[in-house]
Amino acid sequence: MSFYITTPIYYTNDVPHIGHAYTTIACDILARYNKLLGKEVYFLTGTDEHGQKVEKSAKDANVNPKEFVDKLSINFKKLVLDLDCEIDDFIRTTEPRHIKAAQFLWNKLLENDQIYLSNYEGWYSIRDEAFYLENELTKVDGKFKTKSGSSVEWVKEESYFFKLSKWEDKLIQFYENNPDAISPKTRYNEVLSFIKGGLKDLSISRTTFEWGVKVPNNNKHVMYVWIDALCNYLTSIGYPDINNDKFIKFWPAIHIVGKDILRFHAVFWPAFLMAADIDPPKKIYAHGWWTNEGQKISKSIGNVIDPYEIINEFGLDQFRYFLFREVPFGNDGDFSKKSIANRVNADLSNNFGNLVQRISTFIVKNCNSSINPTNNLNNDDKELIKNLDKKFNDYKNYMNNQQIDKSIKSVMELLSLTNVYVDEQAPWSLKKTDKERMQVVLFVVVNIIIKSSIMLFPIIPKSTKKILSMFNMDINNINFNKFDLLISKNIIIDSPSPIFPRIL
Ligand code: ME8
Image (cartoon, rainbow, N blue to C red; front, side, top):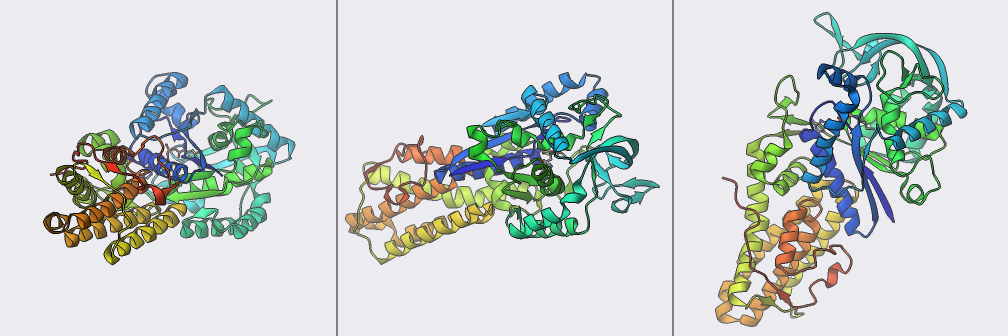
């Protein structure tokens, strides 16, 4: 089984911020989870380096566009690694392999009679790199603005068009037959009603600036940045060679995107693909939008959240955990330092960390650092193990549907139950009265700590690896295979150290 997951490729017009980190970590979590299931995973991210917006930013910085993107792309690549994301490829749209793929896709569309030359006249937002109809705009201080507040300019130029209107029925049919192809459900409904409202042909080339992939056989035109950008998902797996192993194994992909760019992915992209005789994506998941203490994150307000600042203050896994436990994936979320501290203290320090710390130190002190497997379980133990099985199933069902927050919550509930079990069983009292029973209780708890660590590994990989190595587990081969049999051997505990210190 294979699993292909992508982030949007980010514009190289500025430094990365919390929003970019969010989508990339989401994909890393889902990629790591699918690896635990034993699937062959391909995880792609990269940078979107063409278009008017990037060209303008380069001009403002007084640098030529190529030099400009070379410099900015490095920050995005570095962030991926600093977020501990295990990618398989980092694509840049200025690379020769991508220009070749984008031009091939264009020619394919031309060959399939999906493109024609005409004139475009209408509103264009450089910030959104999108065309707008007048009824999608509102007048603010005498000037038209988009819903998100972007300025628009009137564009009048010769342009190639993609016959999007021709794909209306096919798209409706595709989504009606594949109701899971867009998630969450509200986004699916939104896209379907947009398509049913009627699709107009789409302008897919520009002549008034230079910074883009040249249209084959007409150098006056550069491709609309979105047709170039979307094609990255194909380039990485070897397009135009659709018969190569990677393409056969991994296409179609699951695209994780912010809700701002859903229409490009769920309307334009599948239409381009079908028009080029390629299967549409398996799924498009549109997540919500982060605000900063209630305000939209924006450079002009000056409230852009730098992921490095948060990581330095709270720790990487604490940051990853907060982003995906605090807010249901798909909903909007509000960021504040107070809420990260509260969440980390409640879940990671008081619940998970506390359990690991008290059990491991107890075993080191009282059991010569070692616990033996046993079958001598009483009803309380069996009840807790039943809960482990149930929460593991819930966790998988949620993860399979990208409900990351709910899957984390299942593990946290299991850990809370385990803390209650420890209090009730009181191994510190059993030490004096029934040493054999004490061993059983510790065995059950160690079992749950190890399995919870594996379940939480996709979300907080560094910390769970530390815990697993503390319990002498093989951290180079973490997976759900033989999950039931994990603790069939004697467990030796290495010197315990606090994993999640409380944030003061
Ligand atoms: O749109 N909250 O690139 P981009 C959550 N190049 N996520 C956010 C966010 C926020 N406040 N801000 C940004 C582009 N994001 C195109 C994509 S794909 C073929 C081309 C995330 O640099 C979110 O994933 O503007 C959003 O969709 C993406 O960054 C936009 O990145």
